[in-house]
Amino acid sequence: MSSMPISVRVRLSAMMFLQFLLFAVFWQPLAAYLSRLGLSGTQMALILSSMALGCLVSPIIGMIADRHFASEKVLFVLNLLGAILLFIAARQKEATLVFLTLLLYMLCYMPTWGLTSAIAMANSPSGKFPQIRVFGSIGWFASGAYGLVALKVFGTKIDGTVIPLYCGAVTSLIAAVVALTIPTTPPPAKGEKASVIDALGLRAMSLMKDFNFSLFIVLTLLVMIPFSMYWSYFSIFLEDKGFQLHSATMNWGQFVEMFVMLLVPIVLLRVGIKWTMCIGLVALVARYLFFLFGGTQDQTWMIYGGILVHGIIFSFFFVGGQIYVDKKARPQIRAQAQGLLFLLSFGIGLLVGNFFNGMLIARNTTEELVSGGMTKVYDWNTIWGITTAISVVLLAAFVFLFRDKLDHQGTEGVSVEPEPEPQLQASQ
Image 1: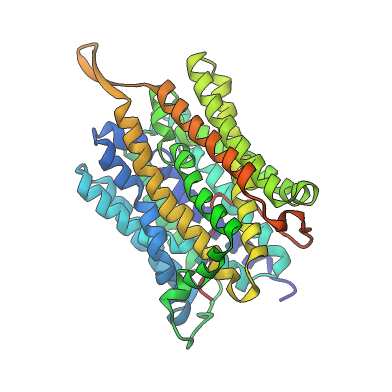
Image 2 (image 1 turned 180 degrees about the horizontal axis):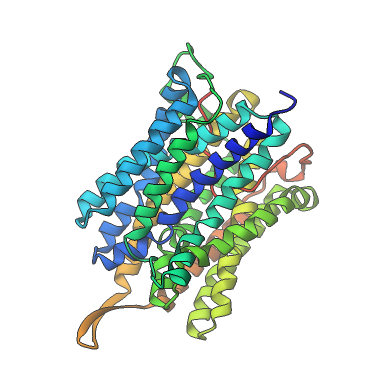
C-alpha cells in the first residue's frame, strides 16, 4: 500500500485519538475518587489492578478476534460494551461491584491497544503509521480538557469525582460509532491454528536462559513498583495538595513524551541500549526526589518537574527495553517476546506494584478530626522517601549488574513513535 485517501487517514487518526482519550479521562483521577469513597488500601489496590488483570488475558481475546472476526467490528463491540460497563461502574459505590465492573471493562478495553494498531497498519502505508499512532498520545494529553472545561466554563471540579467515569463512557460510545466508519479489515489470521502459548508469549521464555535478559526482565518487573506509585496513585497526592485538575496536570508528562520519544534513536546510537535505559531510571529517581523535596519545601514547581520527567522515564527505559528485546530475540519469536515483556511489566509488575503501594499509602495514612469531620492525613515524606530509595536501588542494580554485549551494537533502522503505553501487539 503506497498511499491512502485523506478520508481514511482522518478516520484512522480519529480512532487512535478517541481510543486513548476515553481511557485517560477516567483512569488518571480514579484513585482520588476511590479514596473519597472511603475504600481501604487493599480494596483500592484491587480495583486499580483491574487494568493489570485485563492485560493478562487480553492477548487471548485478541487471538480469538484475529482468527474469526473483522477487526473494526470487534473494536465496535468492545467499545460499546466498554461504554455500558463504565456507566454501570459509575453507578456503584460498593468496592466489590466497582472492581467487578471495571475488571469486565478492562477485559474489553485492553485488547483495543493492539487492535487499533493492527487496523491502522492494515489500512495505511508503513511509513504513515507513526503519523497516525501519534494521535493516541495527543488524545491522552487532550483528556485533561474535560476537567479544564468543567472548571473554567461551568465552575465545577470533576477530578476526584464520579464524573470522569461518565465522560469515559460517553467517549467510548463515540469511539464505537467511529469504529463503524473504518474500512473493513478482515481477520488477519483467519484459519490459522490458535495457541494460548503463543498468545501469551510463553515460547519466548527460552530467552530467560541468558543472565542479562533474565536480569532485565526481573528489574523491569521491579521497576513497576515505584512506577505504579505515580501511574495508579498520584491523583491522591494531587487531591491532598489541593490541585484542581488531576488529568490536565499529569498530562504534561505525556506532552513532553511526544518530543522526548524522538530523541531515543539518537541517544541509542550515542550511548547504547544499557545507558539509554539508565537515563530512564535516573529520571525515575529524579521524579521521586522532586516529589519528596517539593512537598517538604512546599515548592509546586518541583512537583511539576516530577511530572514532566514522565516522558523521559517511559521513552528511555520502557521503549529502550522494547528495543533491547527486539534485538535480543530471534525473528521467529520477536512478537511473542514483546508480548511477554508487556505481560510481565504492565500485567504482573503493575499488579504487584499496586498492592505494594496501596499498603504503603495505607500504613502512612491516619485520620484526624478537622473542622468537625474526620480527614485523612498522609505522610508523603515517608511515602516518597521509600519510593525514592527503591528507585535508587534498582538504578544501582541495573548499572552494576547488567552487562549485555548488545549495548555495543548499532541501532540503525530502529523506528519509534510516541505512545502513552507499551502497546499490546495483535496475535500473529
